[in-house]
Image 1 (spheres, rainbow, N blue to C red):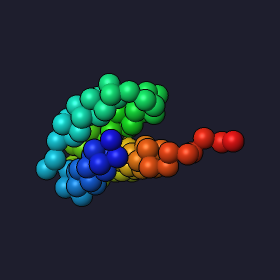
Image 2 (cartoon, helix red, strand yellow):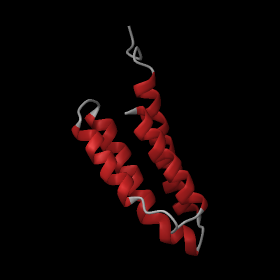
Image 3 (cartoon, helix red, strand yellow):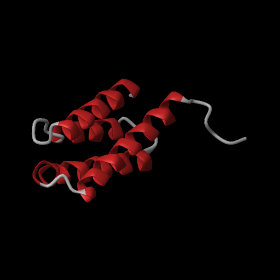
Image 4 (cartoon, rainbow, N blue to C red):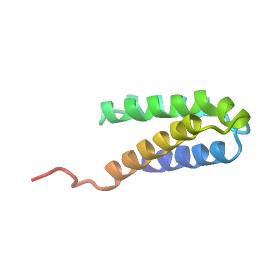
Length: 95
């Protein structure tokens, strides 16, 4: 799970650096599969939503490079980071 999330995060970074060169649709399919494997459903839905926003902002980022497109990628990056951290730190429940 963690490796798949890291791989998707890397593709997101590459897509930000070279908008249009990478298709985030494959990442979304992979995230859907991870969600179906169980656990942390709401978090995975949030990650999928954030990556979907980044995918939709790709053309805008390539053409204008405006702040809202950049923010979409930043949101997806943070969501993936939090998901990775969530799966990395098994004992992250408050006592």
